Length: 415
Image (cartoon, rainbow, N blue to C red; front, side):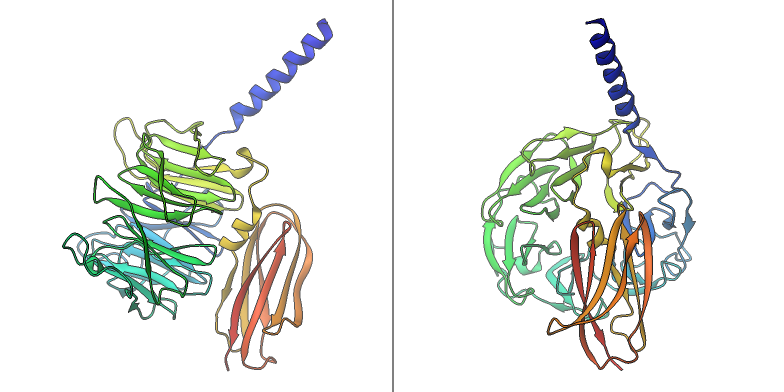
């Protein structure tokens, strides 16, 4: 009996020891991030003071603000978006609009007067909006030009022309695009935004709608800090968290993280229940942004008070579960540039755990053309160079298989 008691105590001590070390670690990021983004092998953080980047998961940082700052004041970056080799940033205080970089943030150029955020769908389209409203915009050339796509939006709702309202950039779920405006109207499109169907209107107590999110099987929206969920593709909505002051969310497989005025919470049942995950993050910290890189979840806090320090924290995803879908990271960090290409393409990707990796190329008929890589990879980021000089013009499919999952991207060869 004494022997069993000793071993039980030993096991409890080991579990307690492990739980103490399963916690967030604050990085030495020089900014209090309002926005986070991953592009190729870099983690970017944006806030007052512009942009910094890290190539070693937040251990060291470099300011990259060339083209962003004005002669009057430094830039303040409110949001990022990564698309292939392009990095987009919204800067409101030096004329306002989207800026872009195609060289890892080293140089920035003004792009357009579009709004706060950009999103993309699986067909390669980018979506954005104007700061002052006017519906949804779409780009088919990596953001160089934009066209309005408001066909189907209700012309008038309670006496207001809803086409002129602020819409959130669409998210996609099961191949369908969804968007939402400040009146709480939810729209869906099955043809890349060419036409929108009104499917529901959320009764809201405020005109502040922060964003629309999608997990593997549900839609979420944040209205005045309250999280609402739809399990039927936007037709009906229910409140799942109303006492947290939510500002941002991210889905990692079947795990959903929310950040807000009381730190970080996690749901493992599609938003039905939530658990506080603030280990080593003060409960008073206000989380503004999440990002995923190299097996870490990063959480950024911009808002600072005497009891709420800003900063950037990171924590291994393995601390939360061993079943987080690795395909989420493959999709997020699988980049190909230039695309289209004349002579060669750079292919970069990150592997979240040791795995056999196969990178193959197929033509549009499904015939395999070549295998670029086929070997075991350790955790980390990788880059391959693919020579396309001998290939005829046309579309090709690159397939990356790792960690038991596969992701594909369509590329173009144009000479």
